[in-house]
Length: 104
Image (cartoon, rainbow, N blue to C red; front, side):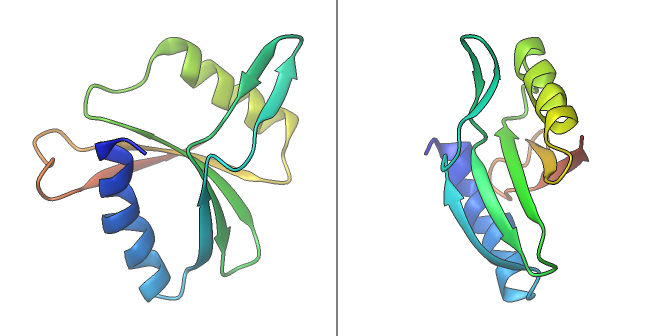
């Protein structure tokens, strides 16, 4: 896990677990095949308290690379039974660990 992903785990996932919204999570637990030789591995697989499984990709304040954004959108279309979300660290919040959520 890189430093941004660790901050996300500490500041978002543990907070959601304490609030009873998340049961558990695993880091890089699943690899999706999108096409021949094209794969997408989300940063976290999150088991939510409402029974849904959410796959999360975490980015630093620099934002998303175009190919990663395309992969998560394609994955969300191919696997509608899951929730796909991206979290981008808010600019200047490195010490506070604030993240903005985007659902795909």
